[in-house]
Length: 121
Image (cartoon, rainbow, N blue to C red; front, side, top):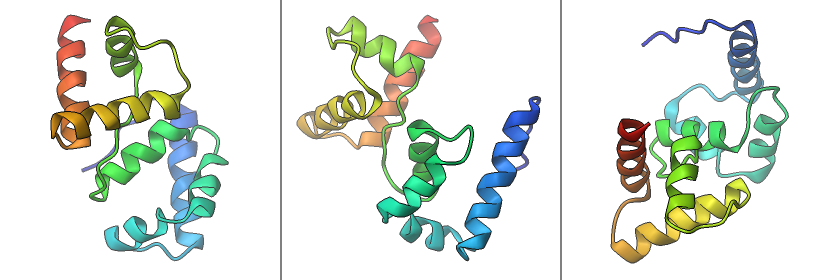
């Protein structure tokens, strides 16, 4: 699948991430899955302009990890549910704990909330 970016910075970010992964000899999906286990590697990704915690969580999801990637829809849903405006990691933790309590996969809960909010927006 090709990525379609209409913004020069997004293209530059994609190139920078690709260069970073190539420099670390991350060649396969399995390599990336393992590479993301190390906090230093996640920190290296964060130093790429345009990459934040949501981007890293999304990349993790692409390689088979189950993360909650908090976006505006998930934040809005949390606020409506009475969760205060918290930093990214804390909002993600609320969703992850909620998934555990409900017996759901974290990624599936994220997707369900996202679909619900996207329809409401």
